Amino acid sequence: MPSFQTRLKITGLKPGNPPEAVMAAAVEALETRHHVESNQLELAGGVPQLNLRFLVDATTYNGENSQAHESAAMMRDAVERVAVTGAMVVLRRNRGRWAPV
Image 1: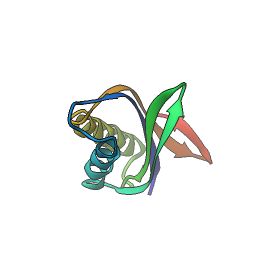
Image 2: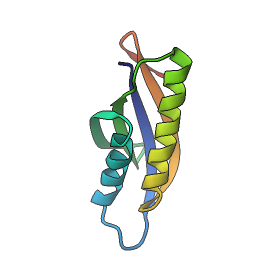
Image 3: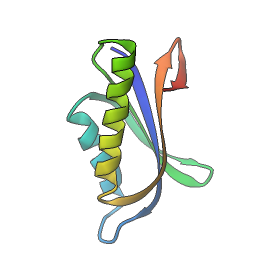
């Protein structure tokens, strides 16, 4: 199964939401379609960033990439209910390296 990673910048919380709600929303959304291998919160250039690794069912190379993008967009929509988001990137594990798709 191909491994993907999505990185999503978080620029603020929406009123009434605790910080934990951001990661919970991201993981919950991705788990509806894929196995989430790991999740973590990092600071990238002083800005919080969610990093989630997930597996996509093997089909075709382009089909897998499309699934990963669709799932990342769905995850972002879920996160935007509780937080303000910034840039997002989707990466694919290829020969031991993460490459943008």
